Image (tube, rainbow, N blue to C red; front, side, top):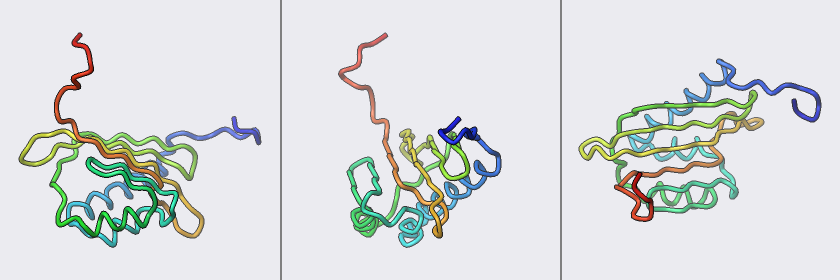
Length: 140
């Protein structure tokens, strides 16, 4: 329960569907490099964060500048999607994908919030790509 005595509903099917629709819209825009749509999905605020494979971006202006510099994104195939909704206004999406042509596996996490008068926006994103083994990790 929260401080007001209300129970937080986790994984409401309608909220999961809404979050999935944002994820699908983002994926379609990414594969087509529709920069304006990608920018619109992210919260236009200096507190928005995006950690990418080769970049660390703080603020919507930095994210927008990065997007403008990209000629095309590597094509990818979704392998697994996992979404958790926390109440009616927050969701975490996790995408495992495979890059077409290389077979490299990537992961992408987005924290989405439903903002008043704006709807769903990504407030934080993290993208990573598996490139091999970690030399610091001990074999099991």
